[in-house]
Image 1 (cartoon, rainbow over the protein chains, first blue to last red):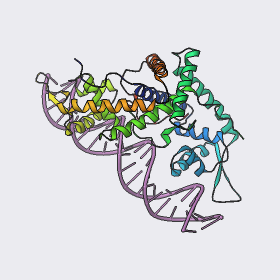
Image 2: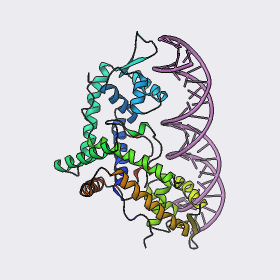
Image 3: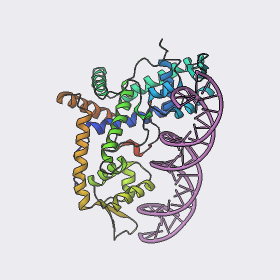
Image 4: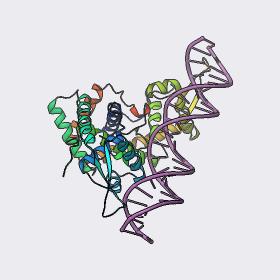
Length: 161
Length: 161
DNA sequence: TATTGTTATACTCTATAACTATA
DNA sequence: TATAGTTATAGAGTATAACAATA
């Protein structure tokens, strides 16, 4: 006896479902490096363009500056990141990776690749390439900034279609 | 001057990024129906198989039973759902859609279709079909339950790598 | 004693706003 | 006065555990 709910899950729901699953799996993996996903994303943003101010990083990631302070604090205490004063304008810090931070990025990269492989192990190489192309197209059409997770903007609410 | 971060975003990151984006868009759309995504998902589960107990629904969605109480409360107060006592075992309720609930599902279905169309408007019909096939394959390989959002299990942490 | 449903409590995380210092 | 960074406060949302009713 079926009700009259939506007939079958659309692609949007599949994307949300898989995206959330992938996020959870990634969180589990980086937890083994004692890292949260937001910290991993921040490390990535710093590695991408070292020396930015916290304000610049906040704008790039689309998150309130106040949230960055705590994130940077955590990474700085672990010696992965350092704040350097700018002699010309003593209000801003330039955020850089330390040597330990650079070394750590290798581990993080390895974890990310393992995560990718495990997630897609149902597809062969051709299919993975197809999927990647299609996803990239959709992301571009939606004007998503490459490498920036939308969750920095509004972490709340998970979809459920 | 580039650092040594992960070279480019893998497919797993693309999935997380698009999945989160899709979830946020969906949340915005259902908000116009005064609904949260978890409420929408619960309505869907009830419509799919009417009359289940709250415990059964909780197991199906993979969420603590305590969370369902509040969700059902909200939907019941709006007259979309009703709890029916089971005369044989007065401990459990059977959760059903009301007539208003059935009517409401039509609106929800329309919103979901619009959401789907808007998200994929960068792809033509063939490409959409391809994408759907690939996503379904991945979801099956990962043993995700059709139509159930993983976020019921652990809403925390959004991915970021 | 086990199970369904419920309520109460505590915790995590986030954003808003107020504050300090530099400009 | 405006901006970078910080701290403090309050709010939303969740899970854990205790509780009542029924079996």
